[in-house]
Image 1 (cartoon, rainbow, N blue to C red):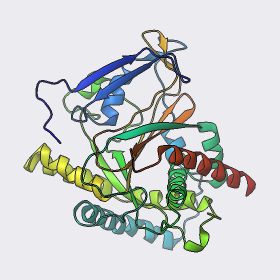
Image 2 (cartoon, one colour; image 1 turned 60 degrees about the vertical axis):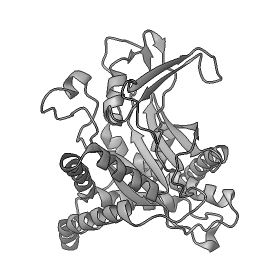
Image 3 (cartoon, rainbow, N blue to C red; image 1 turned 90 degrees about the vertical axis):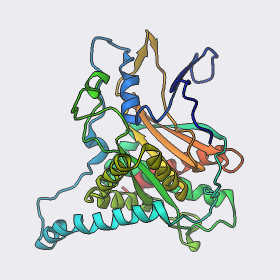
Image 4 (cartoon, rainbow, N blue to C red; image 1 turned 120 degrees about the vertical axis):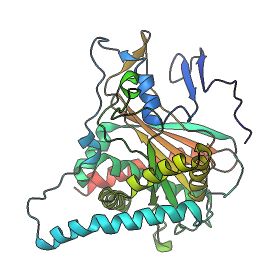
Length: 360
């Protein structure tokens, strides 16, 4: 791509006063990633908003435990489990960090209906699907997993469904990887911009993220009808649980920091771009407010975000707001059928919800 013009601002704000089926108007914040990561930029955006019900009250966020803690009983732990818990973090760290380095340098995913392997940047379409957080939590409680497990399982099932529908000759056992972007700050909610820019802040402004390679579950040729959709949720649960006991993400973040200090930001950008290009899709998840918000006394009906200017053909971004979870699908124009993929997302969620309720 051409170098970014030095005299051009790193942000734009577009006000579109055109009523749609969704709202009376649209406000678009276009922000360069050089300004900061999702945590920093969403934190800045929320500093401009107030609660619609009572502007004097603080904005609140979902409990982290609702998203990342499964229902489990660990009171009875045998000796084997104790030994396993002592050694598994070390083994998982070596495996995850090593795999991350290889995926970022020399190992590429297979070509598939979601990965064309193009070196150029192509235009993409953005579409969104909204799910009820109450329905997601119902699946969570019935399957004894986490909200994140349900979301990831739904995306993985939808992706395999799309691959089958987009190409009848598609191999559902392709090596396909989702690159999950993670915030490396250990925080439970957002901080104000003033707090983030303070020296030695525990929630510093800027780009503080790492990535996690998660394989998309394969489907046997004999199971083209997806007879066990819940396995995608359970596999997501097992992978995320194992990754949680690993320090691979922390080491990846440290590696990016060392590259930035010893070389320059351009080297980090090239490393991230190569990592994105070697993967099949990117998933990013940002936690949003519980209450409905307003901007200058204008109620905000909904909000979502997406990432532009990256080389992958499929990008999924997730944002929770006022009891709903909005999934934005960024699909490469002319290669991925955006409408077919969003239909696959809805079908995958309905299938998982139906089976989760039926098996109880």
